[in-house]
Each structure stands twice: as structure tokens, then as C-alpha cells.
Image (cartoon, rainbow, N blue to C red; front, side, top):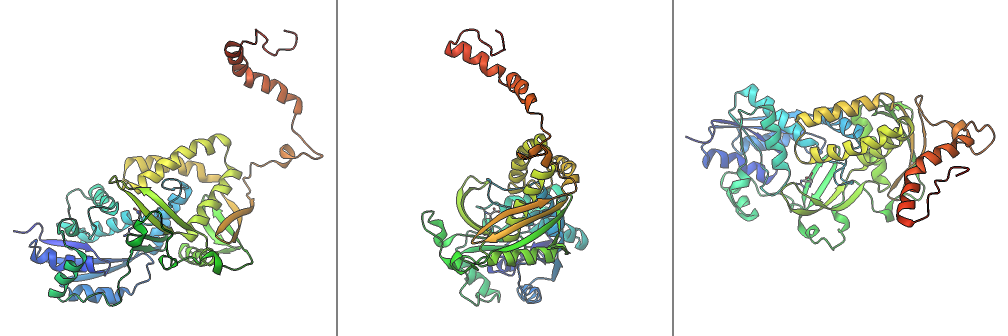
Length: 410
Ligand code: ARG
């Protein structure tokens, strides 16, 4: 009796997930493996992948296009929350995992599987994200993670695959571990593990090096409705075209490269190289529109929510009561985050150069130093006296300046 009868395996077409197919059947006694390849904009031929799974012994090989869902249901709420992990990583890989998990669970319920499987190793965050998301969506399903247990080296894995008709990787496979979707690209391992070494240019694929970016800046105007990006340069776009266009424009100007040492959930520090051109620009632009349309109190309180939101996504808690609660707060703040933000993209930087909104709280008559100033300057005096009172009292006590409280006459 094996660990499960029928398993739905998250399938990328790579060597590891391909080897999972015969491994599940021959080592763990699984009777039937159904593979699920999810198109998230990683730009691979899914028909070829489908055939490959069948050749490796899958009983059924399914493909789902989820690019639009990844953007609307996962990236948009994260943009509204300005979600960054450790203040820099816009979570391009992390956001995709709960979606893949959801599709795995749906397919498992459709085909009557008693388990789902993934090819993650035991050192990364992705295994946690899959396991937790699946547990949250259907706690009855077993989760199998062969690559976490098999203990085979890269060579052994390839050799195992060859015994079951899985071809060696055709091109010399990348020396890095790459994860790619429409939200961005992650690279780790290989020589990137030397934290003190500049990444070679070959690591990057979505962004140009500064030496090859145009000398002239590009301007792009991003239109938001309630915190959601809906158009570029006056043209309404589908979420997918918006990301495609902004990825290529920002990438052309070298925007969205991140080189960081991050703290993985499993306690390891790792060196990661990310390229998230569109997502980087969108979060920055979104923040600018919030500066214009939200009150000071809301903006300041939201910073804390944003940090927690980023940690929660990174730590695999997408399907959790905490995210629902944080989303309720974020959604309540986004009603007036509507308008346009003009960004200048140049030599690796995205800079906001203009913003407008029908809900703008920016009041030129209050802000101006010129004629037409409506601000009551005399009111500032009393305000500063009250605001500064605790400071005066403290100063008297600790610096010994007597009992002068700054009141006129005392
Ligand atoms: N460290 C990143 C994260 O946890 C990216 C992991 C990407 N996976 C990969 N195989 N490169 O979100």
C-alpha cells in the first residue's frame, strides 16, 4: 500500500518535477499521477510540457492558464498593500504559490485524488507556502514532497530520470535556480551564493544593464482606480497587457533589479537576485497616489499593515484570517486612491514626476508660499505652544532652567 492512490503533481517540466512522476509511482507506490502545469507567464511551451509529463508516466497531463488570475487576485491586493518583504522584495515568486496550490486542490477534487505533490526541496520558502496553502484549502488532502526526502544529488536525479525515459536537459541547464512569472524573475544559487561577488550580467533576463539603457528617459502615466492599475498613457488595458507593456518598458530602462540578502522563513539567510520591472514601478506609483489622496493618519498607520502584509505573503499565510483582516483594512483605504501618476524611467530609476486625482487632498491654497495663501499663520503660534509643552516641562526638570513655561507674562 503506497502513500496515496491518486496524486495531482504541480508540474513545471523541469528535471526535478519530471523525476517526481516515476518516483511517486515506483518508490512510493502511487497508482496514478496527474500532472498540472500552470501558465503564469513564464514563457514556456506548455504543449511540449504536457507531452513530456505523459512520456514520464503521467496518467493525465493538464494545463491551466492563470496569468490573469495571478495579477487580479494576488498581485493587485499586494500592490494596494504596497507589500514588500524586508522593504525590497515585491514577492513575485511568493504570490504565485498560493495560486498554484489553489489550482492543485481544485484539480485534486475534480479527479478524485487523495493527495497533491510538489517538487520543492526542504530548504526553501516555497515548500512552506504550498503545504500551508493546501492545508488551508483542504486539510484532508495529503501533501507529498518527494524531492524533500529523496536525497539525490543533481547527477543522481538525472540518472534516475534516464532510467524512466526522462531526457537529460537539452541545453546545459542554468547554473542558477530560476523562478519566472509575469510578476518577476528570481535567481539564486551557483556563484550568487558568494554574497560578496557582483552578479555576472548573464544572471539577468528581464532588465538591461545601465550601460545599455537608452540615454533619453521614458515617461509613462499610470492610471489607478481604487488602488488598482487600469491603464497606461491614457489607454485602458487588460491586467495582462498592462504588466507586459510595463515590464518591457521598465526593463528596457534597467528598472526593477534587486540584489539582496534575505531572511528565509526556514531560518537561512540567502542571496537573491530579483527582476520585477512592472511591479516595482506600480508599487512606487501607487504609494505616490496614496500620498496625495489619503490622510496623514491613515498613511502612517498603513505602514505597519504593509510590513505585516509583506511578511505574511512571504511566510505562506495567504489563506489566513490575518490576510482577510488586513485586506479589509487595505480595501477601506483604497476608495479614493484613484487618479494618474506620471513616472520617469531612466538609468535604472523610476521617479514620480507628477500626480493628480479627483480625490486629491493636496490644497495649493494651504501649501502656497505665494499670494492667495489661506493658512492662518497666527494659529501656528498657539499650536506650537501646546505641542511643545511636554518638551518645555521636560527641559526644566532635566536641564534646570527654572519654571519658565514660555507663556507670555510668566
Ligand atoms: N527567495 C524567493 C522567495 O522565497 C524566491 C525563491 C525562488 N525560487 C527559486 N527556485 N529560485 O520568494
